[in-house]
Length: 197
Image (tube, rainbow, N blue to C red; front, top):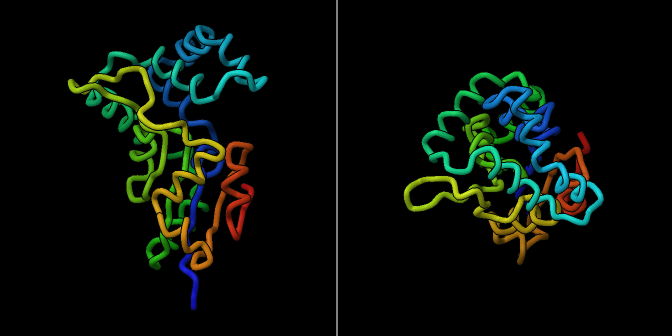
């Protein structure tokens, strides 16, 4: 029996040339504003670097610091402008490869720790599995993440959640994965065909 192919690609540093969360904050506040926001949570960033503070919590603090209180509509508009102004960040060769595979019937997903807020705007034609922000009933960003940070082992959990048969019928699938960092290690180990970008 021919195996079903699933292609799972990381986003930041793999499908893009830079970390898009930092670029999104820079887009909203300028370089000076980005530096100020990073300095405000610097102790937590340092603790994250030495692996005593979870990267998801550090991300949550940064996003809360930058965008807490903004509405979903406001953030969506900012994300669309960011996507429109930053197509140059996308690696066109890999993007073309993914789009071609999708047009031929292959399941293609982006699995990223970045927020769906801007990733879905940058690649609207691809399925995105990502970290999601929490909004209250009035559509205001609470400063918290709605989902666990989609990083490391969480990428594999989210991929299997999206394709439940991977849990029970793994032998029926051929998983191709693209990644570039330690946050992609488990996804690449899980894949039948890993590609370090």
